[in-house]
Structures are given as C-alpha cells and as structure tokens.
Image 1: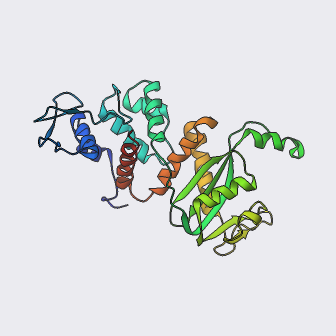
Image 2: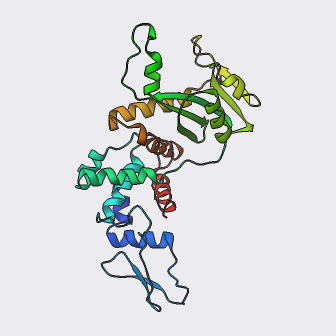
Image 3: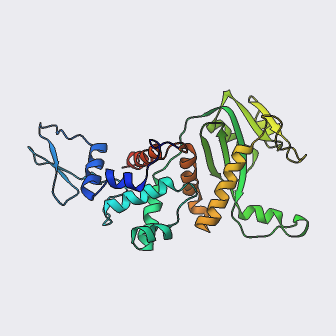
Length: 290
C-alpha cells in the first residue's frame, strides 16, 4: 500500500492536533463561514461554538452529531474514529477504554454511536453477485443425529448477504431464511437485468431466482468451485466476520448484531485505502447528524 493511501496516527495528530482543529473541521463540514447577514463566523475561544461577527448569532457545530453534549475531548473522539476505521477485525470497548483512558461506559457509548452512524447503500449490486445466508450465535447443540437441529437454528440469528465481485457487499439480519424473505432481499439488493446470480444449490432459490441469470454450485456434492461458478467471496466474508466477532467482541446480542454487521460491511466496502476509509467514516458520521 502506497504512502498516499495510508493514514497513521501521525497523520491524525497532524490534522487534528487539538480540540480547536476538530471543532473547525466540524463547522466547515456542516456550515458556511459566511453568515446570511453578511458577517463571518469565528470560533469562540475555549468553546465549541462559532459566532457571527455582525449579527452575533451563534452556531454549535457538534449539535445534532454524535459529539453533542459529550464531555469527552474531541481529540479522543477522533482518535476512536481513527482506531475504528483501521480495525478491520473490529475493536472492542475495552481496547478503546485502554487507549483513550476513559471509562468502559464511555468507550462503549462511543463505539455504539459510531456504528449507529453507518448505513448500507441502497444501490443495487450488478455484475457477478454471490448470494448466501449464514447463521450467527446460539449456544445449543444439535445432539445425536441432529435431533435438536430445529431448536439450534431457532436460537441463531439469520443473516443474508450479497457481494458484487470486485465491488461492494450487503449484509442484513433477517427474521428467517424462508423463500419469501430471501426473495425480498434479492429484490432490494440485486439488479435483475444486469447481474449474474451465483448461489449454492439450495432449493430456496429455485422460485425466487426466476428472471435472474442464475448459476449454482453444489456443496452437497463436494463441489465448491466450477471455474468461475462459486460463492467463495461471500463465504470468506462470513468466515472473517465470525472469527472477528469471536476473537474481538466475544459475545454480541441479537439486538446489536445489525450495527456490528454494518461496521464490517463498511470496512469491506472501503477496503482499499486507509486514508479514504477514515474520511468516509467521518463523512458517514456527519451525514447522520440530525
């Protein structure tokens, strides 16, 4: 990776050396320095506010953002955002607690708000698109001859994903893996007219994939790739997410699973450039401002 694509802690400290630089960045990203009255906004010393030089109107650039009413210094917020942007296998609240020197509650809240600011694109995937479902969580055992398999699957969370080869990925927690659910996911995320649909041999896709240019690979027959017919990319993503969750986060509740997935999807879709990924994360956080 070239120097132009990297973004290190030295770059972070250069761009945001103090809270004043962070406040200036937030204001310029969300507002104009020119006031409608003809005056110019200038930052009030020691405060997270700007005031017009003419009409004296004040603007707080952190209002409505994840930084609103937070006593945590903005430099620590930006450091947490930097760490999150580089943590492709996830980052735990305990790690942020140690790095920032804040309480666990503060670290957990910071990461929670960062993840909640992320949202997946609604643009439909095109080209070669691999689709698959995965099961996350659950502690029950299937037992002998899978006699308890139904209960085991019920305790797990169903996630459906689609990845465009060489492009982006979508992943969504669904209530089940039934045909109707998978059909709705395909309709929302895959362009029927300009894509080649790649799936396993599950009979769930037989009806919902009508109209798609579908190709499948039979895992039951021990075939995992037939030239370029495979779903190895989406299965690699599932493997990475599961290992990361187990190694970094240990346990994730069903309630928060989607927000964690949004984080992994963000990293996958911005995987090629550290600098752009940090900028994209900041942009997503500010775009979510109320």
